[in-house]
Length: 200
Ligand SMILES: Nc1ncnc2c1ncn2[C@@H]1O[C@H](COP(=O)(O)OP(=O)(O)OP(=O)(O)O)[C@@H](O)[C@H]1O
Image (tube, rainbow, N blue to C red; front, top):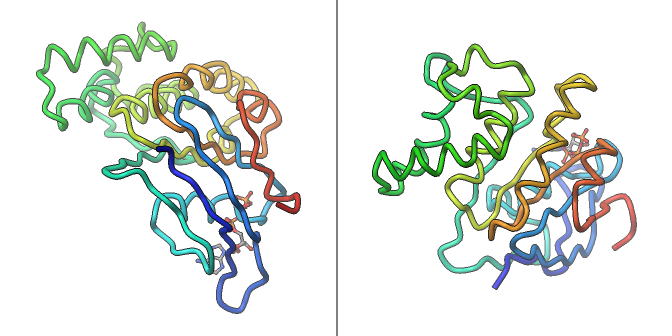
């Protein structure tokens, strides 16, 4: 059973209503774009999906034992650890052996165009490489839901297109991927669009 929103509305204390009666099923294996003008509540909706914020009304129905991973606007890693370590670590934490974790991590590095950067330290990666590494790491632990907040917001056009070029590789892996974005190219990578700027 996928995670779903039932008539979710949110208003911060003293603020205007951000969105009203949003109902949505985040099917697994698909990429869901959350779009709308700046300030419409995209990041707020991600926080509600993650369970970090309770909506003012409505409810979030989560599959039992669901796990959530989050990729932030700014890639965050350990400067002196290698790219492969960043992807293998969530798998080691789940009890995989190093050999299994590195095999899976190598496949993901390949899928995200980073095979040649396997041994590079995080601090040596370009902005686009670092963000692609975050996507590979986000999906590595096979979360129920992967939240991605504005993955290209901090990147220039060329680097954004590197990231947009691999976003589609997150689909079909059994995870519901949810991307908040105002980047038109990112939007086109999504299979379903939840537009918070439109009445629900
Ligand atoms: N914790 C909070 N308390 C009060 N107001 C908040 C809080 N978090 C966000 N807001 C306000 O809610 C509105 C929506 O913020 P949010 O970051 O969800 O929008 P967004 O659509 O993601 O914006 P952007 O596209 O610019 O990132 C903004 O006006 C913001 O200032």
